[in-house]
Image (cartoon, rainbow, N blue to C red; front, side, top):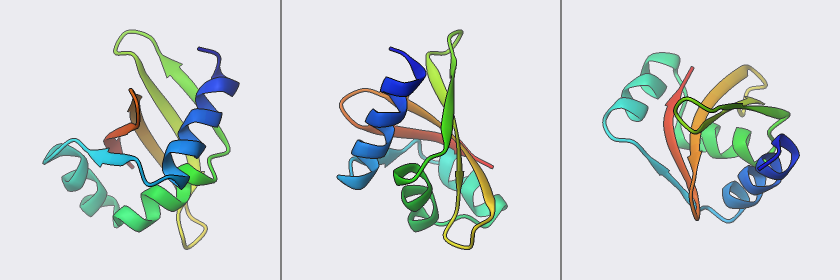
Length: 87
């Protein structure tokens, strides 16, 4: 999958609400960052770019939260998005 294809999938899954969270790690990292689920879904739906991390088959997504602050979200793509962490 190319980065452009992945970005299209990430945006589409986020718009469709097909986002789950690796509990408790993802929720703990989001809490430390001050990011809510709404921030994460908002950012993923409007993501600016992504980079593949082939060693773990995950995507590092660059986006903005609902306040316009930079947010990085690590996701796995598999018939939806699994949020691994956010910072």
